[in-house]
Length: 448
Image 1 (cartoon, rainbow, N blue to C red):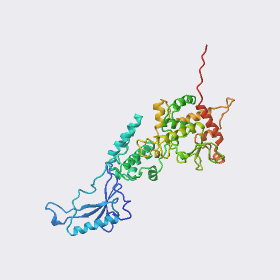
Image 2: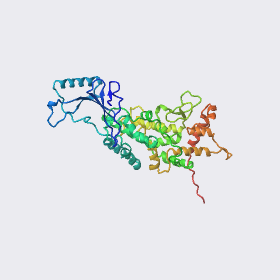
Image 3: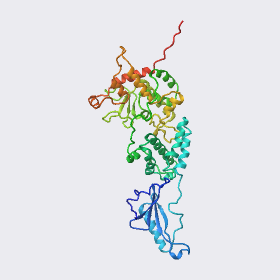
Image 4: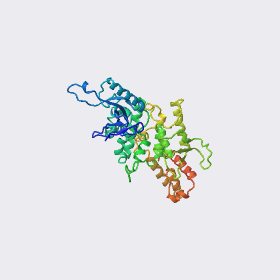
């Protein structure tokens, strides 16, 4: 059955899908009003063709009459009307005995590198800069294992439909790996765009994928088990080691411990989220504040952002980081407080440090059997075990501890009747946590 195209539908027509090797199959469409005017669709590529035949008297004895296709141009190069005009001129020339030059065949034209050839090279360069050998090896395995659906496609022609072919098999089955694959594909395509090997844009964005596949289904129960954590009594000694390291990664990890936020909320901290002086007119929430947008940490049912009371040491760490950025990037407007690698990114303030940066510092450099997220377990365990002077009663309000964990404690009824977010009790807890972290080690006395 003949499939037709016109000026309105030519950009939405599908190709022939995937063959048994995972490559995109071509599909040829015919113009509604000009049967010799064709459109060849492969992935995001759309090529106009003009179909014609040599007259019988011009064929050699052994030759049979067969249609030939001459390309007037692609959809990117020509509008429908311009390509149609070129087609009609070509057909008129043929009627007058003027034939186009021979072509090599349908769809054969010079293209740039494939996703595999380009992506393997740039990913190897990125991976070699990783400090953790295991992470580097895992990064290099993503393209050969998970990107088979696009590996043989020209990188200039990869769009959201092609990225979806990569994501579908793992989107719900392996949600954590799916996000790693999506992020790497997006990074490779952006790198190719910067080298002008493909159009600008982000066909692998989270929004584009979720719009078609929906949010990945979370598996019930524990997937990786509880995050490894340090004991509360070991934290003062650990903080001495951490503060001796003068680096962006160390300041990020200290900010995470002092704020008790999740890793992404810290990684994506923007300077506009901060009120370092506490000058905002908010009598219900006095003092310096860190406002975490809802898309980074959803806490309250009413959609309000999570607002963190900042202790003096946290303010000092953030000011130190801002001073470092002003010195490192003079004249540049500061955006994200923990920017990515300037040697790899055109604008490091558009992409934060890697999600493994703090973990690498904690595990590889400081040799601790813990994770950044596990610091939250350390905090909660410490807070719940702090007692009043009687040695039996909990020192802190349990709901306030929950809010310090960026949770919304209690059932729906309790949350509905609670009309504030326990700001003062939270300030008391976070100040006590700061004092605990700064507690000097006890001096041992010599015994005679």
